[in-house]
Image 1 (cartoon, one colour):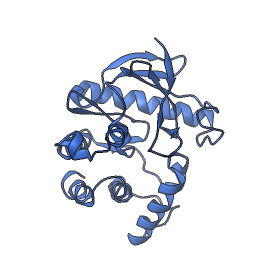
Image 2 (image 1 turned 90 degrees about the vertical axis):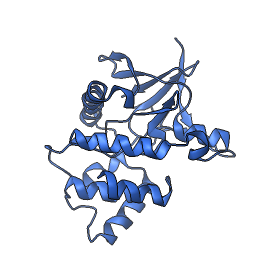
Image 3 (image 1 turned 180 degrees about the horizontal axis):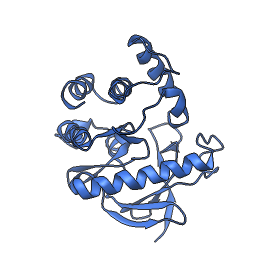
Image 4 (image 1 turned 180 degrees about the vertical axis):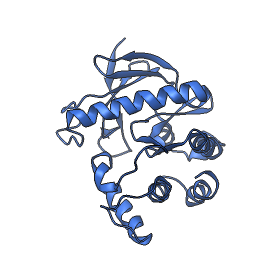
Length: 229
């Protein structure tokens, strides 16, 4: 099967990388998505943010651990795992077209036009993460694919179990795009926290979801904060 780099794009703008950590690949028929935990300088245009080999390995292991956990507990909420190439750190997932965020942009429609109950579906995914004790922070709309009207969650490299030690945002800043870092810092300030401060996962949840208000409707973010966390 042939694969190519997978980019996101908006009308009138040049394509940009789909992920900051791994290299995103998609099959020519758009039925398989590959998360390649490799620092490809061509794909990342020499703007690689995770450059330490041990950190890339940690992200790969988190992806495998929590994607497998979700596949076992809630198989309808994540893509089917087609193959795992441990040697080359490639995870192959079954999809059907581009990601949810790209799909609504390509069609020039709202999330509700593309999938009327998208909000209930994502809300349910967040609730099921909580039921497993998970705190997942890659929740941008591009972290979902849609298959037969069902959203499938990906990107578990930035996911932690409640039993783990938490972190400061300074500890994970390589995972966060520069423009979102500013949003996070702004939200931290509003809550009386600072970038270098280690926080409980529950507070990190709030900071992160508030930073997604430019990506989701405010009323949806409010529902997540009030009903799912």
